[in-house]
Structure formats: C-alpha cells, structure tokens
Amino acid sequence: MYSPQSLHRWGITHSESMERLAYSHALRDPMAMERANLLNMAKLSIKGLIESALSFGRTLDSDYPPLQQFFVVMEHCLKHGLKVKKSFLGFNKSLWGPLELVEKLCPEAVEISASVRDLPGLKTPLGRARAWLRLALMQKRLADYLRLLITRKDLLSDFYEHSALMLEEEGAVIVGLLVGLNVIDANLCVKGEDLDSQVGVIDFSMYLKNDIDDYRSEERNSQISSILDQKNYVEELNRQLNSTVGGLQGRVDSLEKSNSKLVEELAIAKNNIIKLQEENQQLRSENSLILQKTQEHLEVTQGDASVERDTYKQSRQGLDEMYNDAQRQLKEECQHRQDVENELVVQMSMKQEMELAMKLLEKDIHEKQDTLIGLRHQLDEVKVINVEMYQKMQSSDEEMKKKNDVITRLEEKTNQITATMKQLEQRLQEAERHRTSAEEGTRRFKLDFANKADSLQRQIEHRERQLQQLETDLKIEREWRQTLLNDLERERDTVAQLSTEALQINGLKKEFHRLHDENVQLKTICEDQEQALEELGSKLSESKMKIEDIKEANKALQGGQVWLKDKDASHCKLCEKEFSISRRKHHCRNCGEIFCNSCSDNELPLPASPKPVRVCDTCHALLLQRCSSNPT
Figure 1 (cartoon, one colour):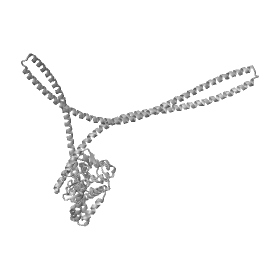
Figure 2: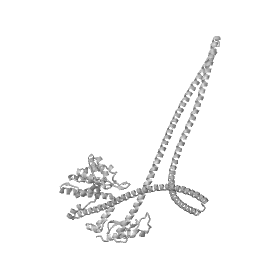
Figure 3: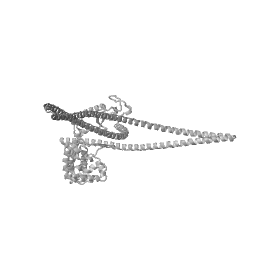
Figure 4: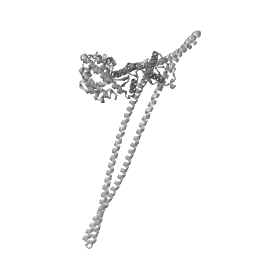
C-alpha cells in the first residue's frame, strides 16, 4: 500500500488507486500476479539489453549495467516458486539443482557444467547457477537450454511448486524472448568470489529515465504507474528476502554456537563425572588408610600408656599431655572422616538419581515386553491352529485304521469263501467218483445220477456267481482303500506345509526381534536429537521475542508516541481478554497500546514507516477516515 501523496506524485487519482486496490484484492492467486510482474520485468530487461547492445557495438563485458540487470531478473524468474529444502541447519533454496538437469537433457551442456564445477572460488550453489547463466549466454545457447528444461515438467516438479513461473506459460514466453539475445556477443569474466557475494536487487532507474522525459500522454502515465507499482513490489520483495536471509543466517550462526556450547558442556560434564569418581575412590582409600593408622596409633598409645603407668608413675603428667594430644588428633581424624562420609552421601544421592533413570528405562522395557506378550499370544494362537490340524490328522489316522479293519474283515470273508470252494471241489470229486462207481456198478440209475449232476451243476454255477460278486466287492474295497491312502498323503502334505510355515514364523519372529532392537536404538537417538532441537528452539524463540520487543521499542521511540511496556498490560485494551501463551501481546504502531491479534490484525503505512505495519482496529478506522477525507 502507498500514501495518497505518492499516488498523486505519480499522476494517479485516489479513485483510480482505490479501483486498483479493489482489483488487487479481488485477485485470488498471488502467484499469478507475481508471474505477470516477472514477465513484464523480463520483457523490459531483454528489450533494453538488445537496444543498448546494438547501439553500444554488440560486444559486451561483465561490467555492462543492462547485462547485470538482465542476470538479476533471470535469477528472480528462476527462483520463483522454488521449493524450500529443509535441513538440520535451516531452510535452503538452490537454483543449481534444476540447472544441473540440463546436462542430462543436452550433451552439449556437459562442458558448461564441468567448467562451473571446476571454477576456483565458487562455494555456494547460487554462485554456480550465476556462472552457468553467464557461460550459457556466451555460448548463445541460453534459450535452447531453458527450452529443453521447461519441456520436462516432470523433472521440474521436484524443484518447483505447481504454480511456479517455469511450469506455466510465462516461462515459455520468457524462453522465446531469450532467442533475441543470440545477436549479442558477450565477453564475460567469471569470478567465483564476485558471484557468491552478489546481491540480486533490480534497478528500475535505467528503464524509466527516457520514458518519463519523452512521453506525457495518459497511456504512458498508466504504463509508468504500473511499472512503479511493480518496482515497489519488487523492492518490498527484495527487502523481505534480505530480512529472511539475514534471519536464517543468524539462526544458523546461533545454532552452530549453541551446538558447540552444548558439545563443550557435555565434554566438561563427562570430565567432571570422571574426576568425581576418581576423587571418590581416592577418598575411600584415604579413609581406610586413616582408619588403619588411627587404630594402630591407638593401640600403640594404649600400650605405651599401660607400660608407662606401671613403670613410670612419676611422669604421669607428661603421659596425660601425650594422651590429650592423641585424643585431639583422634578428634581431627574423626572430623575428617565425617567430611569424607558427607561426600560419600552426596555420591550416593547421585547414584540414586542414576537408579531412578534406570527405573524409567526399565519401565520402557516393560512396555516393550507387553508388546512381546501380545506377539506371544499370536504365536499361541498359531500353535492352537497347529494342534487342531494335528487332531484332524489323528482323526484321519483313526478313520484309516477303521477302514483297514474293514479290509481285513473282507479278506477273512474271501478266505472263508475260498475254503467253501475247496470243500465244494472235494465234494465234486467225491460225486464224480460215486458217478464212475455207479456207472461201473449199474446203469439202471443213470437218469438219477444225471439229475443229481444237473443239480450239482446248477449249484456250482450259483457258487460261481457268488464268487464273482465277492470279487467285485473286493475291487470296490481296494479302490476305497486307495482313495483313503491318497487322502492320507494329502493330509501329510498339509502337515509338511504347516511345519514350513511354522519355521517361517520363527524366522519372522527373529527378524521382528532384530527390527525391534533397531527401532529402540533409533528411538533413543531420535529422542536425544528432538530434545536438543527443542532446547535450541526454545532459546531461538526467546531471542526472537527479545529482538522483536527491542525493534518495536526502537520504532516507538523514533515515532515519538508513548510505547506501553509489556509488563504494564495484562488484558487487551479493546476486547479486554486476558493475555496468555495462546493469546499474545501486540503493539499498535500508531498509538503504542497493547492489543491481542484479533484486535490488531490490520496493516497500514505510517509516516514513520514506508511499508505497512500493524495497527489496531480503532487506529485503522481513524486512518482510513483521514485518507477518505483527504483524497489528494
């Protein structure tokens, strides 16, 4: 947003500015507006570069201002919509990633990429990208390389957002405009130190001098106003980018410092623990030596006292003095022993803390054991299934035994039938003998014997039919037995499959235990790192809040208004809600009072600040009323 005086200075009325403001608010896609602005800037820079190069003599060097501005504009176009890659030290945007893809798409670009990697002094990916753009322009292949790059949107989607300039139609238009640069000869000096330290700020003064002096028509004024709007937008964008870069650099430095401090403190703590342990051992050894010496000394003194009491009664006073000295030394030794015991108590408290930590670890181990118990329950279910299969196999074996018993009974029946057949044959033989004897004896009974033979023949045929029926029954029993054997083989195959599956389950169980151990190790490492990051984040948030308070206080002092301190306000001035961790305090840059976020979410430019700053609802309505009452 801009002040009414600046709009009037550019030849724009208040009504036109309000219409444009309403149009800008109506636009729902800010990425489309950024693409349009970058396309217009690219058109201006390429047109100005070609015209100035043709008037200058075509051959350009690296100090030529329009050429420098062209590279800055191309850098902004390639940065638009670039994805942020998150690392441990912060966030990073790099142009070198998508430009490296060109050597895979075009073999002629391999030489440029190799020369960029071999340049001395290049330390950042941004410097490599800038060197690549300059070498491609000297080869007059910049348009060809970028055309190949924008045709592969599947590869660019890994580096750019879906609404980035390189993935939309504006990128193809810019690549088409770059074809006109083939008429320019460039002789550039590529230095790594200069490319790494350059600041990409677009200078619009070279595009606006001749137009402002030569044209005064309404159409030219509208073009100038749009160009100035784009200039202010780009300057604001550059300021924001510079502030974010500075913030990220400060964050990286603070993280590195805090990391080094933590490493040093950890090393110091470890050394202190080792020293305390050594001192503890030394004190214990000294305590034992002192106790031994005092006991020996007491024994010696007692023996000397008894001897001298018996032998030298006259020197009793001297012995009393020696006894007092020994008692005083004993008291000193006892005091020293008490001090050592106090230190031992301190060490025991530290040991208790270590035991408490071990108990917490044991609690975590118990939780893991509960999961193992659940897995064991699943394994028990699998065992139950195996037992059911085993019972089914046993039932099939019993059925097989029953069928074998039936087969044995049938075989016994067949044996009985064969025995009866043998008896019948013996009877037949006896009948033949009787017949021959009857024929030989008398022929009068020939008819009777013939009738008996016919009856016997009929009986034999009947027996033969019974034998055939028994043979068919035997065949049916044999087929039934074969089917039972096949079923038994299938059951054995299923049992073998189940045993292999049980082995696989055991292998999976071992693999699960191994993965579980690795998971526990990774969790411990992750928890340590998360704790370190939380500590660093808390320190960073505290420092950031302090810096914001200092900046706000400084701006308030420069503006001259009364800046209310944070400790003086516990409730919002408008809604009177109490401040808390979720409801933070915010200063109004106009009146200096403290409000909540919902009562101060407006932004307007102030005389003390060229860019929009936070104001409360009351000041926002008052400033809008002033702006509407003074349209000029």
